[in-house]
Image 1 (spheres, rainbow, N blue to C red):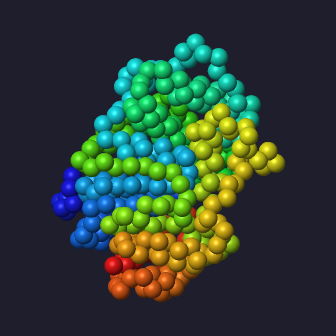
Image 2: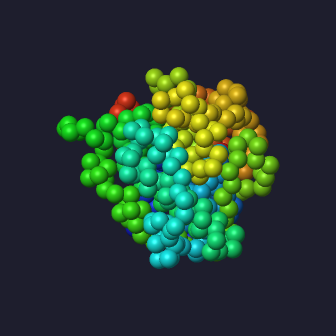
Image 3: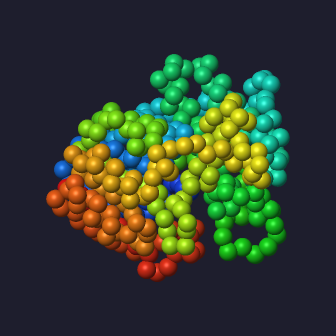
Length: 363
């Protein structure tokens, strides 16, 4: 599918793009994003805060050469699986290997460490098994194929884990919310009760249909955006963390999805945990985004990529304000267009009817 996709296909984008349960995902508003991006002249694009790659996947559908970046290792795996990968899939023998015991001495780290925190004992045992099986997949393939096979396995595993979590997060020790026999206003009790094998197969079937080549050499990277050295992109898309009304600081995605980070780095997981936390969160690493004010960060990025078209996704109301960000962008761009659409995130019950998704395009 190339840049000039039909009106019908453009409206079908949320269905065409892999499903995700990631907080802040732009998947549901991809038709609106496409409408505002389709006439821009660019071939190469950096998605600087890629998350689970929904917008990168849109760029890939548009036939662009895509670089997707995220500082989280788990999102990096998703970027490899969906954006960098254009043909590799998990075959029946891979699935059979991943979902069954293969005569190894399996670890019990998740069973021992996360008992009664996120998942049932039998589910923790399954996670320990699959984690080792993903690592042992290396015995069958050369490194280029292996990289993508493992990334696919991890991405599918993440989706299965998220679907069994209340609010699709790992921010609290709250397994009891899944188990309580009460009337609920959130979540999917049926999915929570579905076994991991079934969920893994379900997400595998979906992802297998979403892998494609757009004829370009796309890439996933994992770094602090402030430290990216390559600035030779026609367009840079920024969807950074920012502060919502009532919040003291931007969303901490590291804390919300730390369990997925641990799965990717299983061997080092014990050394990375903050054992004082009830939910066994990871120790927070340092990054440039957290050192400065949000205004300073925006200014730095706008200066860094001043030779590119800069597209910034943001929410209103937010802090800094839309007007302030526009003023910062106008220091480096002669023209800034601002588009808005009504949008409320599904799991954010605090947002009001006045909340909008905002797109700022600097040229």
